[in-house]
Amino acid sequence: MALQLDQIQARSGAFDLSANFAVQAGQRVAIIGASGSGKSTLLDVIAGFLHPVTGVVRWAEQEITAHPPGDRPISILFQDTNLFPHLTIGQNLALALNPSSGRLRAGDAEKINTSLARVGLEGFSERRLSEMSGGQQSRAALARVLLQGRPVLLLDEPFAALGPALKVEMLALVAEVADAEGLTVLLVSHDPQDARRFASQTIVVEAGQVSPPQDTATLLDNPPPELRAYLGAG
Image (cartoon, rainbow, N blue to C red; front, side, top):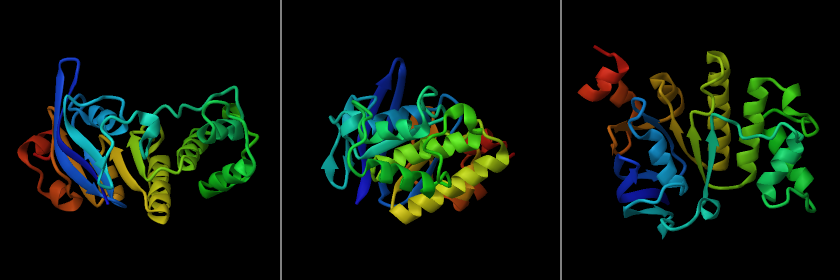
């Protein structure tokens, strides 16, 4: 199985994006590039927030180009955790299971508690955001996307606001969960060290041009001129 972007041409305002690559199921892949290069636009195409002008998006050989975001096998975690402060953490997670009502059905409470325990937040169901640290809020947001049970996870710099140690901790947690669940993960980051720690493969985005995945260590040890300039590698 694979996530495939086949001859994609997309436009967001005056910005054009071109992509033609595949990511094999179960891979952890970093997406790096300068601000404004098209990294978030690429995620928008994959997630279904931006429809391409031409080309096809596929998952497991099935075309999903016309599918709305909610019908895709894809979840996304943004820098803004998108958790509601007036709800408890359990109520926030219930929205992942029942988006229209947030009401719990039989077995939902157990699923929520299991997901919270998976990210190190056992017993946090009745907490509110004001009672939690930034790292704990990030863990709760991760628990919520995991509850959706979708095989592809997109990370749009969700831990950028955390301190260096907490960011490393969260990336390690995502890697552990992704490997255990067999998730395919694409991580947008400005930090090449994130790519080294998290991803065996890396996609470079430069001025709307998306490269196919390359071995992370090889790419960062010997970057092409454009990437070298961005990284400040001399």
